[in-house]
Every structure is written in structure tokens, then in C-alpha cells.
Image 1 (cartoon, rainbow, N blue to C red):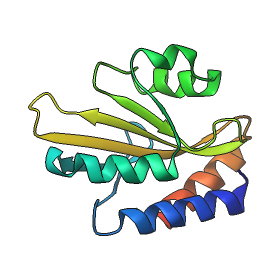
Image 2 (image 1 turned 30 degrees about the vertical axis):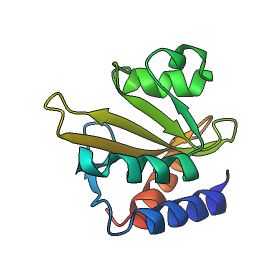
Image 3 (image 1 turned 180 degrees about the vertical axis):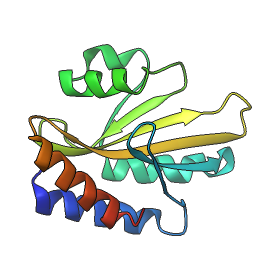
Image 4 (image 1 turned 90 degrees about the vertical axis):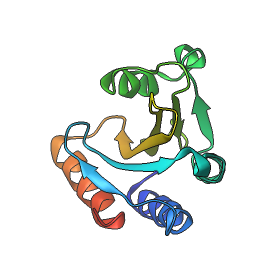
Length: 137
């Protein structure tokens, strides 16, 4: 995935999520974040599986590509019921989403961001800005 692929992937994902999720920027993890009721979990999971076709849980993440495991570690790892979605992690740039059900059983948070295999500092900053602009956060 290059810059134009990232743009196209974000636009498609954003269009699918429009009216479903309200995204905000989270400086803590440098991702977008949205919360939703578990009543919408099937609908949102279907969208994520369609646009981010790779998914791991707390037991399968051990077999994920190195870049996915590294990002997961940066996000404090997966706990039971949490998921990690990604577009093709073999690409130089891809989109990921962390799916975190809340302890109250009523809400779920999702965090989206682009991932880069070997970016320079300026490339990462440029692609992160593009991602934020595309997702309007």
C-alpha cells in the first residue's frame, strides 16, 4: 500500500463507517478512536472484516507478522475478547484497527491508524497527517 492506496483504503473505510462511528484523535496511542454500543458490534465488525481482512485475537496474535505484533505491543497487547484487524500487513503501509470491548459489557472502542514498515520520520509524519485529514480528525 502506497500513499494513494492508503488514501483509497481510508476513503472506502470512511464511507463504510459514515454515520456509524464518530472518530476522534487520541494522542495517547496516536490513533483515531470511536466508541459504540455492543448493539452495533455485528454491523461494525462486518465492515472491519470487509475492509481490513486480517484479524487476530489474544491467542492467534502470536502467529501474526512481526509488524503486527510490534504494533500490538505498543497498544499494550491483546486481552481476551480484544481483536486486532489490519489490511494487508505485508504491504509497506497498511491500516490497522484495535477492537477493545469495555469491562461493563455495554461498549466497545475501536482505534484506527496507518502502520509503516520502514518509514523515515518525515514519511511517517506525512502519512499520519494524510490519514488524519482523510478521516477528518
